[in-house]
Length: 339
Image (cartoon, rainbow, N blue to C red; front, top):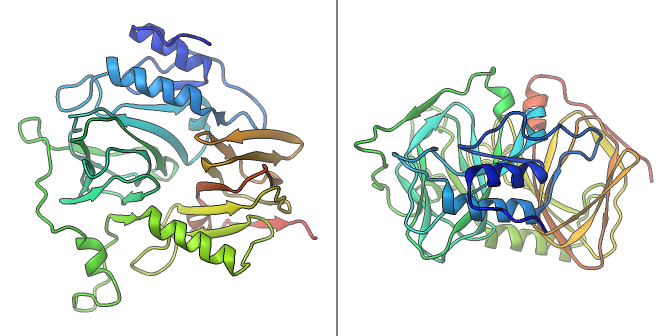
């Protein structure tokens, strides 16, 4: 097993061996791009060990060497959307900023009740399995007051920014958002009872989708026998504004695959990135088989036939897909294999 090492150069080399690059580190020429339908796969061992060492030697914050500390798949930037992973060490807080891309996060690990995403002046607790949405041009930062690292997976829609991701940071002398909205502000004001806005549409707010809610929905659908033949038990994290996709560009999904379940094949001209939240299984993309396990990140390129073959226990996958953008542009197509 390759040692991560103690220098920035050691970390760059370790990440490259796992087809990853790190924020604040050398990103070009570190490893050749892989080819093939299953080349976009990054294992949890490399992601986790790379993040932990990054937490020790890569500084973040207003005076750090980088605004945030992350590792990204080298091949991920071929796609219009992608996932990467971030770590925030105990006592750290990143400089607040906003940008034109949407930023979404799935929590993998966090200190109980002591770490937060601060979005548009509201604090959202980090709890494993939560998905937090920061829509385009909303201020956000990350804050870990606990005693263990906080880890999460990001989902980005970079390919829909016209090639320019505008980024505006709060000043170094006042780098953080003041938490001035009460807990649960967004959830409580965008429910069935809402403030009057003189006919104007509700703005797309930051949203927290709790793991408890997602888990219960998956379990209830599973108990009711409501299964998609191509995805197993499958749900979307709906926008609280119009009940449509999570964002105009991407939708977050969660799915449960039962023990030894095999789905039917289909393809679509949107891109899908997956994070293996629990379990282990195989995805077959065209004629290539990709085995995955908990913590791995992998992608299905557009217009490739694919299906799932789950392992011996239940599995849960989270995913992002850019079908909302493709649909709005009038391009979305899909095909499904018959039973």
